[in-house]
Length: 624
Image 1: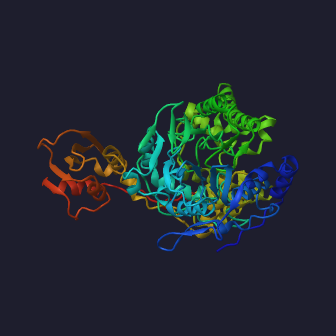
Image 2: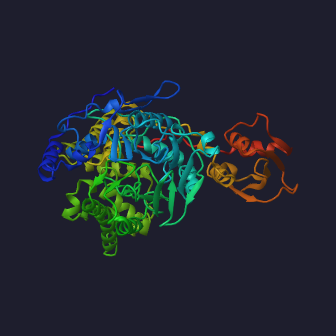
Image 3: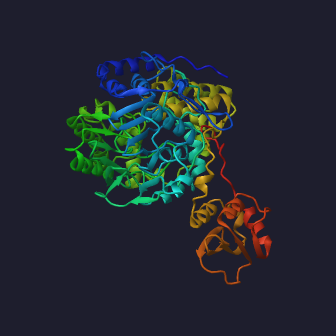
């Protein structure tokens, strides 16, 4: 295993400039992050049933003191704050456990029990958080769980705080915004393999936790990898202004769909004068398009919902908290904080469109745009998770698409073919490496990376190209203020030196797969059909789901799988009767177990299964 290299002088000089320019003397965030601390566990390391570590907060014990030159001082500051863990009082009656996962879990005390908000990614950290809460606040029963939005770090640990049996018995309510189930189970179905592979880069899953490795991801340190669960909501919230009283706790809702998540809601607790902003106002610029991949989010709507929150709750809230990071206290401070967060997304949206209409492309806007001083110097507006650069490009993509209008970009060669032509034009591989080394020595790591990417796409086994490219990406990682950028750069360097690490953060979530609707199941199958191999097939199946009393006609023609809800009519080549669970197993490759009542040509099923191509969780990223 190759050792990390030293930071280059240009990186050290850039860090020194940031130390001099940014308001590091402002320690209010550290006071806020420590406020209300009640205690923590002896060891913030949790294991799954098989003994494997699923969360290791102890691996960040090195985050102490001043920033080393291998980490951007602003990112080091953020990681110092985010790595704090334990139980904290927001106000009397509202408590958060922070630092047990990527996200926070919040406990709101009612007349007889406790309401849990956003129970983390997996059940082991969630159970540890509930145990820590009860250690300090008593053994209160869970009476409700609220999912503020449809991302897995806000619902996946639900089985660590309650059970399906308790919900079925009416002891626990599960509350979520309307449309939650669809988006929660469907988000990663179509491109899930690719997103998972890239998430390994984004969160630095294969990197050592160290000053020259992974130091965090800005929004939180990393993701837990334990048991993921799912319980369907018993109550769906539908409209802003809707109120509910749970165990004596009044909750006023603001719906905020199409912001950080497709379905999301904010919660106001009048009795506590406390506002929960879910994930729409955190202590970082968030992503409009995550580096792992997603649909582009709408910054215009995001800003509008923040304005609505200020107008609706601003004069009634004495504290604002979220499902990541630490709260902000004081009515004036709450309004200022939410206003700056609003201005951040509105400014990026409006100024990007202004420059689009002046003819600039996304890449050009990302280089030219500058935030106003009030935003540039607000720690919570800095780009630790999202960045100005990639968010601006996301806005361009949202409005203009992938094509920048330059006809030369309309039909370029793909990366490998392009690389071969560039390297030849430069004068061959040796000349390309010579120029890359010159750029590296001059501190122009962006240009060096461009040259070296072409070089390794031409000669992926060339040790010189791989070594210099790895060094270059490492320098870019050392210089990155954004946690996910750092992780991407360092992950690329790791694979160049040590080989493909696959998808190390993949979680086994059968309870989520089980919630896929039949339509979602068939859609997920359609994107796995190897089109060219299926061109000559003409298949017709009737699939009757016995437990749902519904039938589908499934056809495969021209490489396209189509499903239509309709009764079986005997005209299909094959009719299958089975439960939805057995269908899931069948689509997963189990065609031999019992539970299938088939009539007709079983060869149809065999031919269908033969053209299914599963995603590759080890596809190359930094190499061709």
